Figure 1 (tube, rainbow, N blue to C red):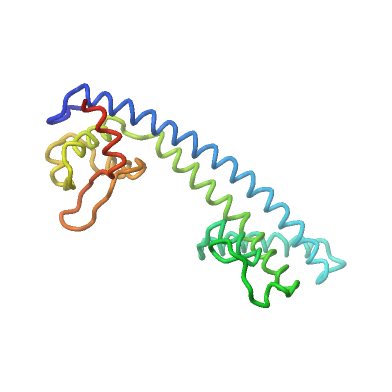
Figure 2: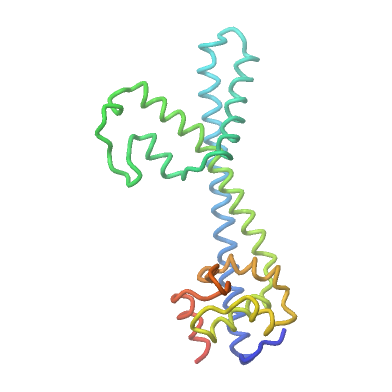
Length: 219
């Protein structure tokens, strides 16, 4: 792909940098996905065993009903996670009776062992599915980045490097007429430091850190 107003050397350098950066991100996301999914499975198994044991208080003589209740609790946790959003760290802090910053609460709830156990059980119930779902999202991101159009994204980065302010989408399309804008603009979201500016005229720009890092290829 031809790069307007930019030397081939700069384009090749940025293209090589982008490949290294994305490959590193892919490895990080795959490692994180594996760890979170394994953690989620362990938490789900623990939750299942707890629910199965507690359901014995309701159906002490029916293993089948206890099994159904435990499975229903796991399924319900996944459904609830799709409806409510809470970070893993917030959930853990909440179960321990901590504030969002990790400081201990001083209310009387912390002295009630029943309520504390209830919060811990609820957190355990939600953390398993949340870890798995977040792990799957990281795996999906890694899969998406493997399909990145390196030449197209590199061409856009070269253009953005020539402009200190935003570069409107319309100008990018006109200067890179052969660019698959629908695909490339979406993939640019996976490049840390690329800014999507919605105010008129909508377009792209670079963060100061990314601009500084890419500027070394102009020397």
